[in-house]
Amino acid sequence: MNTVKSESLFNEAKKYIPGGVNSPVRAFKAVGGNPLFIQKGEGSKIYDVDGNEFIEYIGSWGPHLFGHNPPFIKEALLNAIENGTSFGAPTRLEVKTAKLISEMVPSVEMVRMVNSGTEATMSAVRAARGYTGREKFIKFEGCYHGHADYFLIKAGSGALTLGIPTSPGVTKGNAADTLMASYNNLESVKQIIKKNKNEIAAIIVEPIAGNMGVVQATEEFLNGLRAICTEERIVLIFDEVMTGFRVAKGGAQQLYNIRPDLTTFGKIIGGGLPVGAFGGRKEIMEMIAPSGPIYQAGTLSGNPLAMAAGYAALNHIKSNPDIYNQLEEKSAYLEKGIKSALHSINRDFALNRAGSMMTLFFVEEQVNNYDAAIKSNTVLYGKFFSEMLNRGIYLAPAQFEAAFVSTAHTKEDLDKTINAVEESLRIIVK
Ligand code: HOZ
Image (cartoon, rainbow, N blue to C red; front, top):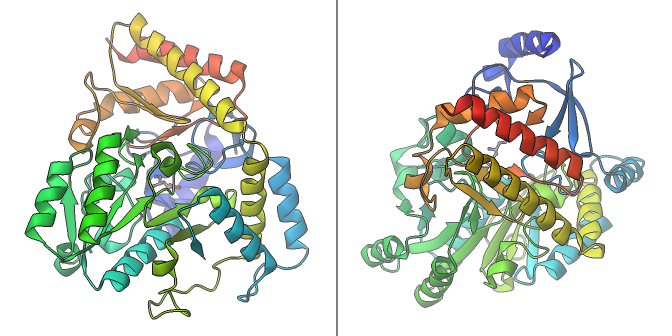
């Protein structure tokens, strides 16, 4: 594969940007080789600056439910840009988008727009702390809620991939209020609560984890969290930055039929533009400034371009409920193909799938929490990634992420992917 232009851009980038990238996972450090610089995306494909074409499964880490650059989002953006890019003042589109989110996710009685998933989770925890008057919160090993200091403790995603799940720069004071529990293990939560009676403001959880690779919560675990939170007056926060509007119209909470107190969103609600949001019970949300004393603000929050793209994306989902059947069909087809490839090489690696999100772990046991996920052979993942890339398939350049299927993936794309999986596995697994 010719990568001359990407290499030259990467060398230039490294002079001015730490590690040459604006977000660590993209640097290919976990899989070897140099990152490819992307020129454009269309449907299920992306094209790099050297003209290489890839069927890709990142979809900007989740938001591109309909593939890259769908016409209805492009049109919405072009219309919006005619009127200007940002005002730092309210617009009609913010109201329409907030209303739509609230209609689609009934637990979200009120919502505040922000600019990223990190801002959403930070603000949700602040809201929970302000509401309860308590300071500590529980998070789960391997879950990733963005890069605010107090989340970077045994965190997933890039932090885990690069071997820095607990980052330097996080103070002891900051870390002290983050209490770590084990995913899918209610007992670990109960013990923490017993030791910290009436001190815990929130439990934050990815109801389907995507940042230690895909790991689904059991119904018993999430129902247990809901019951504990109600009993102990703890705010239950579902981090649906990845799963919101992806696994179902109403997110993972719809699939599990659980009503969290607060929910955080990102990515999809901006149709691929920088955006996030947090929302939930009115009683809590009304405590946010200016209706209440909990401060939260942002000049670009509710930005008209992000809202235009987001509204177009959400409205498309609402008017085309069949997209979830399409995603399920395509993802199930891919899962079946990968399983049969694994069978053909006599290996039983864990393949976790939740709707259109999936991860192949290079470990032959069930992966249902962080301890199991980190047993995956990441060296083998790196080799797998490179073999797939050489065959025109672009996966996440890190084991502890999800592959995202979009409605734009065709049967031909999926068949090509399955063939590439089989060929790659045969080469790397001796
Ligand atoms: N940590 C992000 C995925 N879970 C990666 C973001 C990016 O590199 O764009």
